[in-house]
Image (tube, rainbow, N blue to C red; front, side, top):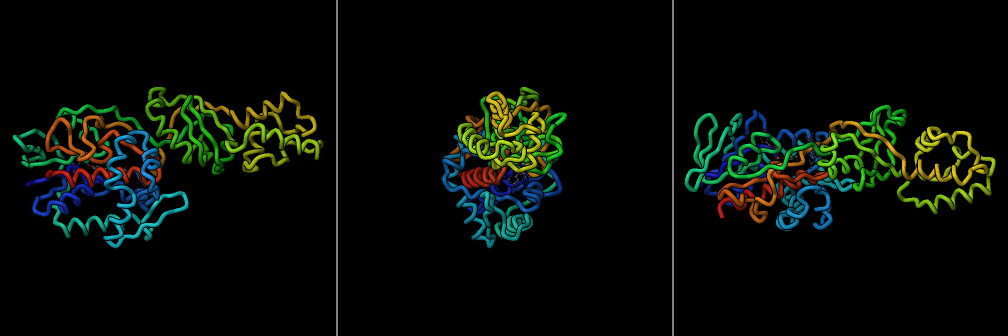
Length: 396
Ligand SMILES: Cc1cc2nc3c(=O)[nH]c(=O)nc-3n(C[C@H](O)[C@H](O)[C@H](O)COP(=O)(O)OP(=O)(O)OC[C@H]3O[C@@H](n4cnc5c(N)ncnc54)[C@H](O)[C@@H]3O)c2cc1C
């Protein structure tokens, strides 16, 4: 039995290791078109590799996948974050969770993960072929004919080519349809951004585009909004945003934890105690002081005294704090992590084995599928889970 894994990224590598572990007698080949293995693993998480997320309630876990949430629930029962932690532990790699749930190797370097994989590949006897690009693939009886400069015949193929167009074309050639790839996980550009002086300030906010919304840390940058809330919104809105060519109205609730009625009570209290105090110098919310001042100055509240705050200006204040509006035009790639929304249509894949429903012996894993997660280690977890299933099912 010969198993060919196409793509030496996170998913392909994990699939190859699992296949060779499960079927020691099979020959497992890992073909990578470039001269380097695991390139994204190396640069991921700022060079630290955000391996997974400490989320062990699988129903909660799948909520972090704008695409693939329904399909991944079963696979996560077979190989979820707990299994990832255990897998690495058994190979002397300890992972640690940060406060926000992201998990990294305790060594804080992605080289630990790469070394672990390379050692495993050596120990198990996975045959690695670099600078070997799969150009085309044909079904040949029960197996496959691969064209990579020369012809190679194999019994099983695991396609783990990430978001590459060639990978999608190869899958198309074997009967699959592709959900159009568009970017996910990006930040929003706001032309003439009124808050750019506050670049670097972060707060918890609610960000909305039409019916889509996300609450979480929002980072103000020179050119617009970034941070987890913006990135998550870009992931869940990836298709809609692409359709609108990234030109959308953004609504910001700067104080999502504070109801208007609570804010009104606080205003009433402060007004009767300090009617001569300027609103801008009064602490009514948990917003960073610089942001509070900037929002009020921009909206003409610079000189307003608490005692002279009329009903109509209070309602204008609520609009600024709870329904602030910005026009986003364009996006910027987030240097930390970006993924592709789109790929092989999920209904065409058996998620118990990752086998194609159209071509027997063909398996998929990782980002080549129409699966993507938000930032935080979820994309690698998809690569490990689907890689584990594909590798472990290839000769069933
Ligand atoms: C800068 C950056 C940082 C990231 N950080 C994180 C993070 O910290 N945590 C997280 O969860 N996710 C992170 N991600 C996302 C994560 O890296 C990807 O989701 C994951 O690497 C996908 O793995 P994959 O194996 O499916 O695809 P890839 O990693 O893209 O690997 C596909 C491989 O296939 C090869 N290939 C393609 N076509 C062919 C062919 N025809 N023949 C042979 N080989 C081929 C490619 O050269 C490539 O090596 C990050 C992404 C980026 C870009």
